[in-house]
Length: 303
Image (tube, rainbow, N blue to C red; front, side):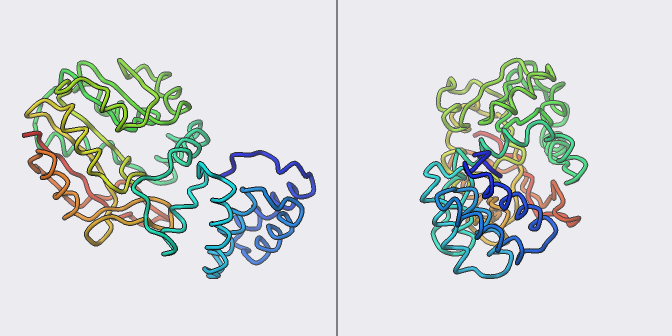
């Protein structure tokens, strides 16, 4: 990921591009050498430091990778590269409570034009179908006057769920994703916003259903989200979501810069925010290099 197209030095830019190519081929030694050369010419260019850090991590040179990630973070105060997540994965700092806002926005703004095709074709993404099936198990045939799709992206879940909602609202941090969703004509209302801030501004008890499909991989501490959803849902309303499985209690950050959560943690967050658990079951919403990624699908009812 880059959020600056050029270092300002053409020779550095060429070496950087060659390094990216070497990285993609799996020649991490060559990539490292090229990124070192890049930084000799452009020593304060954050993309070069981040690329070097990734090459070093791929080589198992973790102490050096930590130094390079820390340098990236020092040069990139908003953390559009997600360096804090990488440092947490390597044990160099505590996991942040959420992915940096600039990282999520940059990631999905760049991803938006190819989002649907990449998810479905490359990652065999099936989160919306799994979530819709879980809702149908929990509330067969039920429809909702107002449904909220948190982190709606380009509208994959909206397309699956549209017939169950008389009024459908979508919210996403990425303007480019919201633009993609607008083009599909699925939503009655769309907003570019942080999801917790959006929920806090919504009227109390104004929704009958809230969904978060493949959203919690960018949020570690779910307590503020569950609390905000609980306030917006009317009593008896449903909250359905997917999450990756951490294989332990609590939450952690993986090498993919995504958060995963344990089932006991999800159940505890539910109990603390006035939810009854209708279902938390194992489900994989996507593949990683051809292998199912362990995860959860959950449906909660607002007490």
